[in-house]
Image (cartoon, rainbow, N blue to C red; front, side, top):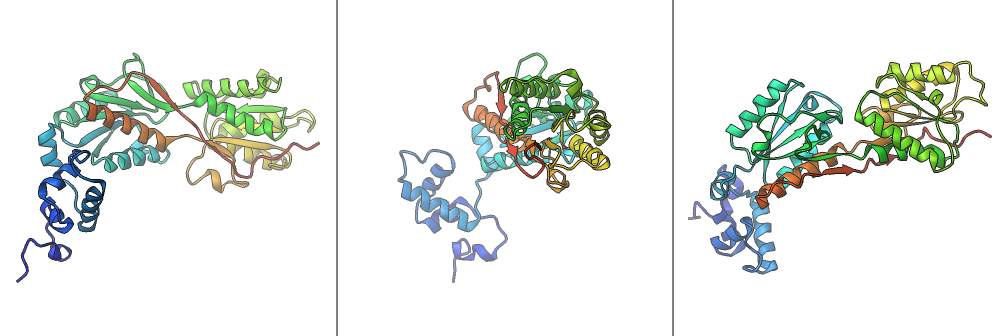
Length: 355
């Protein structure tokens, strides 16, 4: 009769496979399995034996017991993620996915709380997570800004994502917005455009940094953008439409901009609407560059929008990696700002200027 604990019955039983099951299937001792999943295999087991154990674990669907391991290490294998508006917004879900997958791959879970921007809720969320003894906390913001550090956050390992600590006290991971602004303008300059403008923007860090990068790029070709070519007004479709009408409506073709950098993809959609209303072909007569690479939008505009992507997923991955490294090393993350590249996404809205 088959032993009730034999690996041969794993496929048909509902019980969670154990490290002893893995040891039997791999033909090794229970101690060897413990070495692999407790980070003590190097120097104790050959690479071939480690590989055999991991393959057996994968075949059985085995995952180490996080509670037992946490008790041994005085950890819970859970980190907290407090956000302002991210969990309730369609725009930054990639940050959450990046954080959760990075944590999962390093055998941690993420407990997420969205405060809807209420400072009192943020303080309460951090207090609750600390009471639950999470190993560390990430605080993430929907848009790049200087933030008040929630009360209690400095009592644990902590990293900020897409925001900067107002008091400069914590590690932060943010987009390299100035470099992103340079990249957006360079797309137009490299295509041959010299009469370029910038439309949209808010009174925030991202707008200021993107404008600096925009002007940096123009200086490389001996150009500058006068205030008549910088049209602020917001970050929505209506702002793009109003800004484009101001730059294009009634202006002779030889004097109006041939390329426009937009604060974000929603602004670019407004510029496209204005161009269509004025009978200006994109990209034949006017080239456009957006910003954000907004999911379910940028690639579906007509024409599909060339844009600069915000590294939401990378911010989640890097912030989580920094936090888990700090937890593993029992050392707080270095208090520094990491700026992540904003990748260019080339589609069809940029072409050469007409002669």
